[in-house]
Length: 294
Ligand code: CP
Ligand code: NVA
Image 1 (cartoon, rainbow, N blue to C red):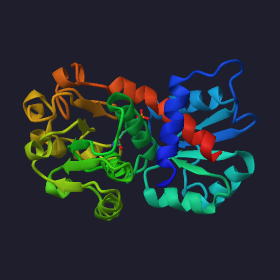
Image 2 (image 1 turned 30 degrees about the horizontal axis):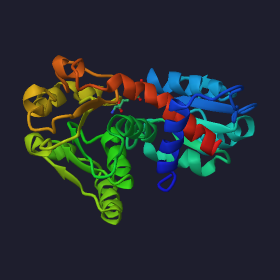
Image 3 (image 1 turned 180 degrees about the vertical axis):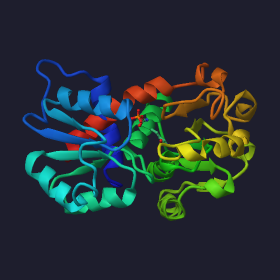
Image 4 (image 1 turned 30 degrees about the vertical axis):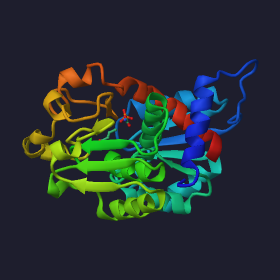
């Protein structure tokens, strides 16, 4: 994926901005994507389902109570059974370990539709959005503020691969995954950009072209809600925090958003916000991914 990311972004941008003349190509004709969800979803489910259908294939939704990965049967058995029916699996999982286990035993491609460690399809859509808005990625400064979660981890890798500088400002105990950060820093060094984790959000937003945040309470962390909402309060993206950003900065959020918590209403619904373009770009980025891997 590392070497393919830039090609995928190019392809997504091209198919989004240059509508096909005549009959649309159907690279997924007679192909089926099995979509296994252990958690709720609006964007991932709908954008994959529509994307597959626009490419001529069929997407099959399999909800949280149906497979019961590793409980009703082993992950390896699920992987082998689905590999006999479908051409690809899109999996939204609680655990990155189970995601990898499924991919190890499947004989068809497995697309990560979010787990506790990563959210790569979101990251592809985010980079596509930045590319559209800023016309380039290389050398830009993205500042992520809030929880060092799955979305933050994938952005660290995505920014490094595409030569963007990234600062992640989080409370120390919620810093991004150390292994992913080290991997992103090694890639960044090759690409000539800087990826760093810090804790002061004001320092982190200086000169930012993009300010990005996500929920303080990810799916599966509901029991920590109260404690997290107190701890993360200084990390809210609001007008005061954004004062030191670059003049033409854009605000990004993977959604769902919580106004008054990780982002103020004025920023979320204000002129810098590109969150709905970002949501739409899930469709375009994923169509390029699907066409490349299925
Ligand atoms: N951003 C995102 O993945 O949204 P959903 O959880 O609604 O799929
Ligand atoms: N970090 C969030 C992203 C939701 C799309 C979560 O995992 O719940």
